[in-house]
Length: 398
Image (cartoon, rainbow, N blue to C red; front, side):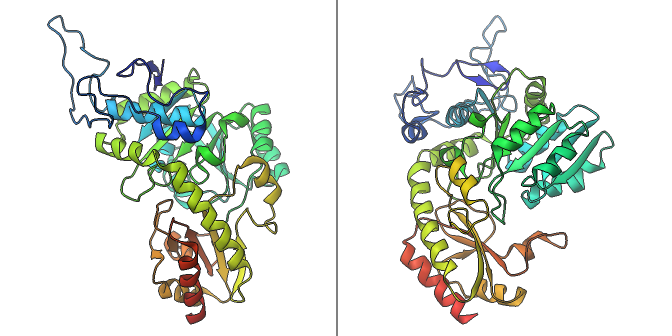
């Protein structure tokens, strides 16, 4: 029976379509979380906008739902789907990816120490360094998780949680998840892996021993840049930390709306076909950029020249649809390339069907670690020849 937070709940029918683990993952991604509506026979799930749910004359709830902040049928369907696809035992959905990490940090015991990847997504680092670091009962330390000796030394100082991301945003560093997880567990720490970029189709952190997997569902899961959300999936929902995170979700209320969940589940259905086209394009663009005379360096784990190419080949099914590249010149040249794009959009965010480029140095602010001449590229599903042509004219004209 599916678990939502700490509770077992009954889906509308005997079994939600797609949750048979014997089926291929690309089949389950189409059907997970869907069920035939028992009243109308609708194949598309209805949107349940009600904020409250009725009781019978005896005061008992008619169904498994009490109040929309605590749970909603659309959120339940999305949580069941994401837990299934990540190979987890339970999932919790939130209003954004950062809200998901925030709920996790709120749930830590006083005195907890958190290690996080030094090249972690800027928004996640900012949350820990600028917001949660103000709490006297939590301590944080950035560690280059590629350097296992540095990790070992940091873990020796009684760490509770390690927060990792691979590949990293925006430098595409690849972390050896097997090594990080093994060392963290040996030191008594839990491991949370941000799997937003690879998605469960390309990387399986829970199967490698990670305790928690985080997604900004805004990105590849929803896939159309039209809904914001986040999710956390657990390998073992009996841990006390998971119970506290579920309590934060239900009590603090940073939850997605029913329509947000409905949109995300609809987007999830096409993840496999979208991602296949995006990775095909990214591999072609990375190879083309690597040979361009106006490009100094391409950061893409699918290239044999990438420092962690072998690790990526071992722990990822394919190298993903994100890449970044450094143009020959400084901040003004990078800005010129970005300004010259005609097809590729200039916008923050990633993972949608439209290709997007961003000058991360300008976006991240004065505390950025990102090189001034770096452009991050989220590769969409357009024809690769058109994307290459747009990059070519932008590079030539900068």
